[in-house]
Image (cartoon, rainbow, N blue to C red):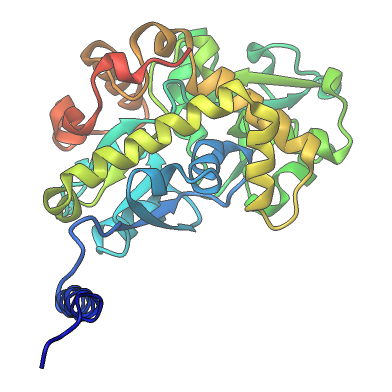
Length: 346
């Protein structure tokens, strides 16, 4: 029996489609998105703006990444999750990573991207409590929350400005009552982050004119702030995915710099509540003070220098005794960074 051309074409098309479907059923697409478990060291707010933008604007998806973001309570917990293989990439304090690696820890965690070129360590004081300069802290009481990282660098700052740190009372308080106690005048100052406590306390009704924000970087602190740290097994198995994640974050920074208003909306979309005015102020502060610094504008974002690293070790050592003083390559791996020209922030 002769088959009509139209019928023959139909059968040929049907056979081709069936073959493609069969092949698809038994194969995995080569370009399947890489899953990444990403951990923030604190809940999402304006300080997490590069990551909020990357998620909300599809920047992760554009790099063929499927990113699931969680948050923990502090850098120590974020590093522990990485070490246990419960996270692939985490945001954590770089100086806390240095101390962690110097301890008896078996997992060789390394940072791959410096998110905060300048740290946010600060003492937030009330002028109405008699604190108009850093030296006025002598004889005063600073509230220190458990796990606070700024206070670890306080002895180094006090030494540089010639202040007798033993004459400053450090009072242990809960993190949840840090801003309430300062706003109520129960302590003269608190230690914390300039993009966190300094902004939160104003939200409690303390006027800007009554606050003195003593940023450690204004008094010679050379240490870096938060950084992206990777699980070594994940980095070894997925080096390109780590680089793509970094590219997405850099693009998140670029968007936030150009359009902080809409970047704030991206943050609010991923927060449980939140004040638009407060988070917009936080976004602008962290971009200007910590992320897009003059050094970053000159050299590009994400890298570190041996000179600053060595200087930061000296400052850390004022309050910490190293078992084995690390070299930069022990805690930082720049191999995943894009070229410097691709890390410029305009």
